[in-house]
Length: 221
Image (cartoon, rainbow, N blue to C red):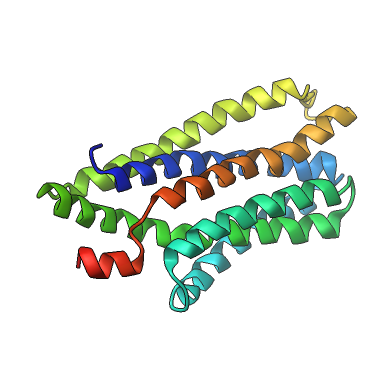
């Protein structure tokens, strides 16, 4: 906890995970009710997001050979927020093609930081060793894993409360019920703006993280 750079990553992990989980929680509801999709289309919508996540991992490795990984981390989160805002404003009920395109882009951009994040933990451990003389590798990675689970738990509870707030009507005897316009808007907010705000916070927090490639090579390695 005395390692400022690790503490920033811990907060980033909790907040960023909340954004991921909230978006994932509502994806099926969004595809079913907001887009009016069948079960097959709902599955395709979720799969589109997963494909975006996977391709981001591959692209991140290539991009970080060209630019600083901290810059990639920061600006991917801001761009994710901006895409969320645009998707909320542009995509209307039943705009299936636009929804698929934006959902793919959001999941692709947001996960460009995925491989970067885990490398930053080890670099923050190295930084802590230089600052304090103590190397706390196991606890550092274990602590981040705990933060990840905490983010999942908080998002799970928040997602349930939001569904109640937006007056979601559960299926009765496996028959989907008609949702109000207020509820449909809620699904859209839960997929876009609300998780987007968490990624905006991550963008802000990452300006306090200063272990760039240059800093690491000059002060730690």
